[in-house]
Image (cartoon, rainbow, N blue to C red; front, side, top):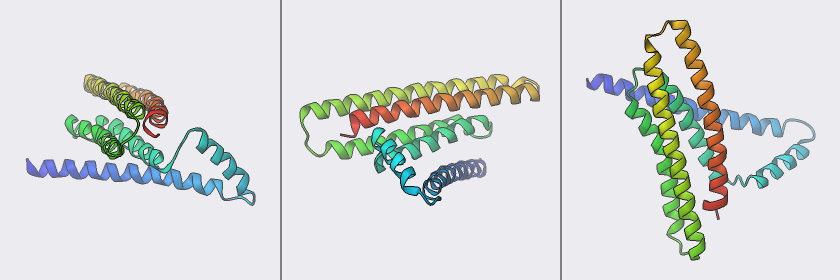
Length: 187
């Protein structure tokens, strides 16, 4: 029993590391693309205007990396029947705990009442977004367990469909998260 637990735990840790490294490699590729030609200043200026428009400071960018990696991990760990579903939920809610800790650091400094209320409303909206994500992951888990009895080809097609659909929903929720975080919590 304990051997299976540690094997599952090591599998989860390996998935976490793999997805974090993949996201960091993508970011490094973007950085390399922006500065590879003889005219990197034009690309950097376009990137800087995009950065200012969407208010992507280092804190927001780091949260986006963490959240996107945990979303990818959750989507793919739901596909693996060996990993218990509560582990997937633990991974999913762990990124929310990072935001809660960041929010706690921000509210320790006294601010105007209006800014504090806006930040609390922003945290509540992000929490609502996480609950919607929880129900989506739970529904994905139920769908995956329901199609386990189908033939392998149909099962593969449905799994691919669910993963693609889940990725689209995750991208939309990441965009919503970024707008809420930039407008309400990052003041």
